[in-house]
Length: 168
Image (cartoon, rainbow, N blue to C red; front, side, top):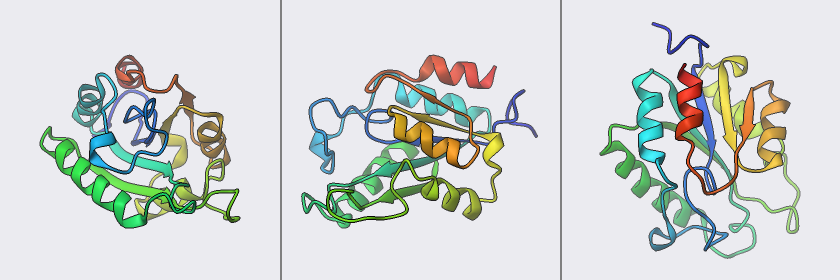
């Protein structure tokens, strides 16, 4: 069964600014800092109703800076994935880059497409049939690096109308 008329298999979402509001906390790694962006639950439910798979790709440079640890991000993700599941939303995969260019060099940090490539390969997806929603030029550059259509939104805003367009 096709997911929609455009044959979108999956949507890849940047985390901070697209899924959650990071206007008060640039580095979000604790539950009390987390705030869903407006209409996010409804937008993701809409995509799932059209059989579109969901993934998250996120630079987490605060790990490299020593502001928090991988386990902090993992615990936060586990909690938020469970919350999404309570709304019938399944995030199939999450890729993070723990590095920061001021601290160390790496190949995975966006604008590199490596995190996307890893998820595409692991889940047997064709980049041309996927879509990335990001809030920074580096998100869009990462998508372009793997041949994935994308759009840059204003951070900390609703993606509901965009998701409606994706399924039409």
